[in-house]
Image 1 (tube, rainbow, N blue to C red):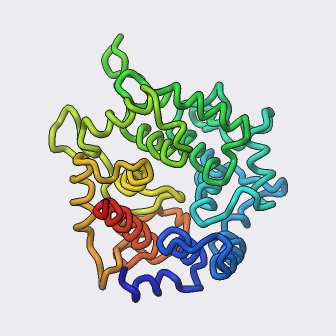
Image 2: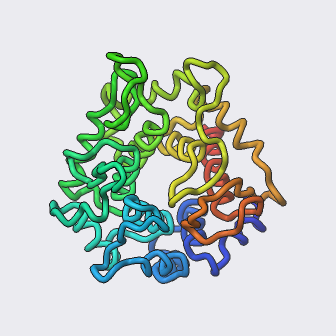
Length: 320
């Protein structure tokens, strides 16, 4: 790795990137003093304080259009997980427990008012890609051992469909009487969920069918229109979540599938992404500015970190 770029990522002014670089790129142990110092600074850095400042008098994230509407709570917690906040943070614990505890007060925070859709996180309401993405966030925050989370993960796994993909429960087929095909946009978060789960989840027909859903289309292409890319191939970070191509690359690497032949198109695209002095460019950003960072078109530490992480993984494959 280029030492100049690593030093840039280790800038103490951005403790989240520093922490991720130390632990994931440089493999420093968790008890290393530099790691402990960076983690401590993450807890009160500008990006983290900015998100927590949006809580209401109950300590919760209210439904506000200027943030993410009914997705505000889910997205803010996803952003915090990406920044490096752990689930044992005293500001996180009561929010997660509230989300997972049944109660009528959830509606004002999670109902999409114009459609009356409930995005409350419980077994009866699981049915959207955003909820699947949020289950990944709960795993990243350390809540996998919570029986309520485990049960919902089991429900999601069981929702794998006839073609290996996933589908919002509200989506209907355009052809009367015909069962709709799975939605690519809904299936990418399911792939990511598997990648953050223990190896014990990565067996059985549901998992095999999901992987086949992607490999049978060379990962990012349409099955009905050969050569048409249906993934978002921009390198970007939305609401604390990576764009499709980055999320797929990250997931496949974590699942041990980064070097399969079907991934060639993904790596060809990523390897040709624009750089300035080895630093990768942010191609687009959410207008709500989930994480304060340089504007699109500029060298970006988050994008550079992930691209170097992919390169590290692929170099490890080459050594086998």
